[in-house]
Length: 134
Image 1 (tube, rainbow, N blue to C red):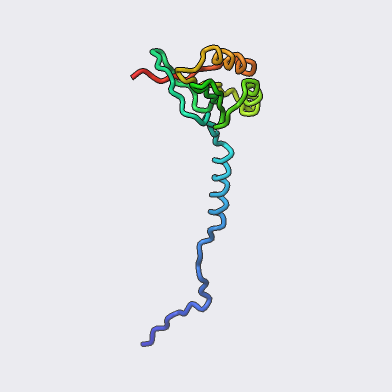
Image 2 (image 1 turned 45 degrees about the vertical axis):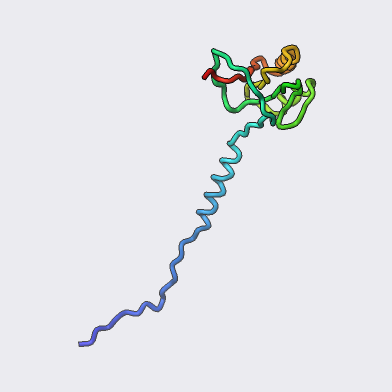
């Protein structure tokens, strides 16, 4: 008795098509890049004073820093007092981001008052960053 085996002469190499997978990954990547918000840090180290009543604010904020030498910084660059409103308007883009001023504990309070007044021209709510109590 003779057994006949079928030979599959039309055998096609089967491969997984990864093109749709790559398309989906790129679409997800673009979605996360567009939807991500980035925080621009002031660029200098500030020794903030401690307070008893501190509450956390949102992470998406416009940050300014006033150093102990009374220099104002934003994004690692020294800025002038008059540039604050322009920076807030450029950084906000139709969102209500809070403005946070990081002040060194040895900075001049009169300059801090001027910075707050300048920032309030663009935003009603301006906060001062402090350290939480230990």
